[in-house]
Amino acid sequence: MGSTKSKWRNQQLAFYDGGTYETVRPVANQYLFDDFLGTTLNADIWTGLDVGAGGGLVAPTGSYVSAAIGALNENGADGIYGDGATGSREWNIDHGWVFEARVRMAVAPINTVEMHIGMIGENYAAGSMCVAEADEINFHALFVLDGAMTPVIYTDDGVADNGPIATGVTAVIGEYNVYKIDATDVTNVLFYIDGVGVGTGTTFSLAGCAADLMFQPWIIIYKAADAGTNGAGTFRCDYVRIWQPERNHV
Amino acid sequence: MGSTRAKWRANQLAFYDGGTYETVLPLGNQYLYDDFFGTAINTDIWNGINTNEATCTATGSIVTAAITADVTAQDAGVVGLGLEWNTEHGLIFEARVAVAVAPTLDGEVMIGVQGEAYASASNQILNADEVASCYAAFGFYATLDAGLGCVIRTYDGATNSGIIDTATDVAVNIYHIYRIDFTDISSVKFYIDGVGVATGTTFDFSNGANQMVIPVVVAEKTGADAALGSILVDYVRMWQTERN
Image (cartoon, rainbow over all chains, first blue to last red; front, side):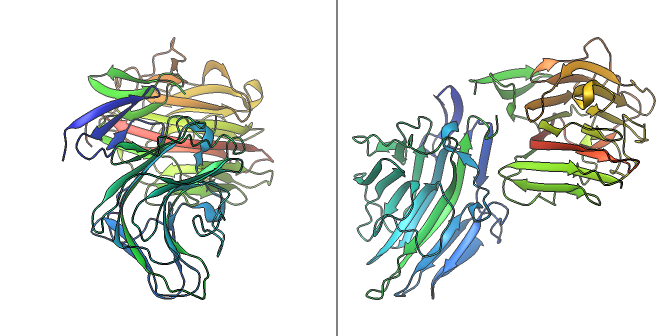
């Protein structure tokens, strides 16, 4: 635990934990925070994915949500994403959203399994949501982990396709990291792990997205349909916060 | 988008958007904030009403509520479920709303609070005066400026303000932030986009003690005619400086 501290970015006030760099309270016009308290995933905010044999999404317990990919050789997708399945993506790329989630791996992704943490600008499409093994999500800003447990960054705005860009961070099984993606400046989206800027040698622009393209959170462990290999991987997500200093509809 | 700014009213701290005057974070003891994320209205807080042919849906962080031309009683919008807000405890109500279709004929729009459960087909405060206990609200009705002139009406159980013109006309589909401040119960204040309106009138809400109210943001008609009306509700915030 650290002291409460404040920051002033883009003329917006936010309070954060000076020890962990968790943004404990952004003072933002539009704000989503889910601590996953209780024993039911809030279906008004989240869509739970449990695709493929084995593994699956585990209902919240102990204030986190977890999901695992099974030892399967087919497509698998387990985790949580926004309500985009029904066309209700709620975060405007041109209105400066910031995404933050605290996530840890319990079992490292192996073979073709990839862990995604971040935001995507499209709806879920069954069987075609790879980022690392294939380039199947047209609009995204994501941290991605594979068996090396070294998070890398991928972005794509339909024009510039970046990634994998190394963060220089090695995640440790059973230890949480705070992943933050700051789209305050759509021409220079910034990535942070535990409060420290990563991938800073690369300019990640999402300015190629259509104006006012709506994004949604995407925290999914994913495996392509691949008859040749089995997969595995398990994560826990402690919280998700997303905020925006300007409302969606002006 | 404006800078985060702070204000100090009734000895209470709140942060607001210096550009739009949206109160982004009031540090109130009791606080409700609904941005209408997801595709369902939170039925733990709201009654999302759509009586008869009326419609009320949530998507894209907006509630869209409309009454149709059918000659039936219709109500569309969000209404609080319980009388959970005490007008004597420093209540402030704020909602960002756009009129999508101006109310015609018997239709009207109500944005505010009232001291009793919402009564379908008999909850008008402009075309009729049907809320018996108390209310304080912004409203729109066909009589003024083709349904786009914003008015205020309050009734505390004793004093009825009558319909007061705010001298603010809105444009269709343009959002405005409507705030009602009960911090001083003897002089309730009304604001549109951070600017005080109807300031020449003193809205006294001091009758009774501890009057409890619910939020009401609806388009409604009694069914007398083919009235139209539609609203878009972006968010509702309510807070109190003292617990119930």
